[in-house]
Length: 463
Image 1 (cartoon, one colour):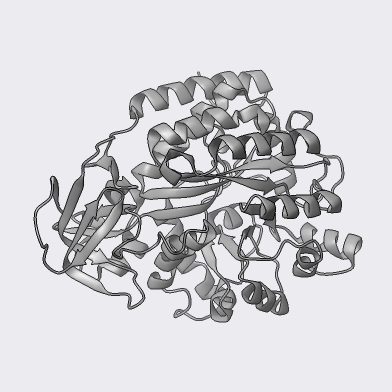
Image 2: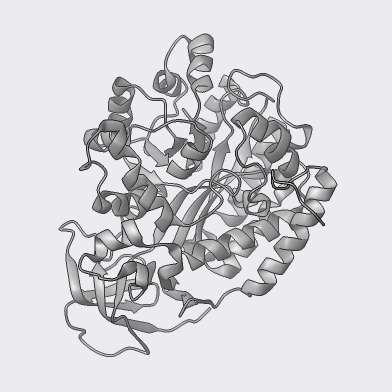
């Protein structure tokens, strides 16, 4: 990666996303080391590297708060099928045959795509022991992204109200899960100049006992780290907590100590209004995953209501089989569109709000709200430049609207994380893109053959 003592980004259309939400049409950002030292209309002096950002949006890096790194390798493996079929016959079978080498190849493919499309930081929600946590962390360190890596935690084989349906290769014991998390915390927590965190990644309802939930809450707070889990993704979750706890989803989470600003709940589709108020009061984070929710017909999260009540909402792309891309700009577009017809109001979830979700919301979910998410003096230099000089972005009379409603990750030009340049002129500097793709193709073919999963178009193929 390119490293400079000082970088000056000049003449850009700067979206500061600071408390006043200032936009500087000809703005300048100065970086020294890994920090932003100046945000101004005119640069005070030169720097070791000067980047002319004319015609480009300069903004905080995007933060994806719900990522399955292992699922990049199985992109497109289970399209247009129902959720239980999706899990039982495709996703779990493939992931349950992973090797450490597969896990690393998939993680590097995923990170390459995220960098190319403007994501600077992410929350990986569940790393199984067979994916090779240590190897993945080493890849994050080398490639240069900011990441929360969550070790999967489980002690049962169910999913919501469907008992014992998990593929054997995906099963781990509670003891092994906790032991590996402890080891990875000691080795990687805040390593790579603070870019890597280790979290607890609780499996979905039905795969974690009440006692294990409570134990993890205590351990996470003892180690001053954070937690994430899927909650309220499917109606089965609601039935499960009602039948087993006599309460609703948030009541269940409250009972087990899961609520709080150190928790990121992924999806959060099936919350009632009173639950949303309690999520807001406890500042429990919600990772909204619109593409995944639509593709699997999971439902529509009540994001307008959440935002109105002050629930901290961020955005997540989820995984290769449920979204098929890790492009946060595409995800912003979907988040801005899908809620308008549900509430019959075109003013809800504006372009500005989804940008806030992808930046400030992501920073808060990471526990780094004071250090990331906006371009302000003293904050960490996680910055992207988006080139607006494309047909799909012309005319560019409203760059904010264009970014959300007409842009895509392919428009990203430059990515800086922790003051280091990872992507310049749309070219990766910390990885060999072609080598990553070749390796991923080989591992995917071998994995599919090993798992004996058939993946092909529904139309007839004539060789």
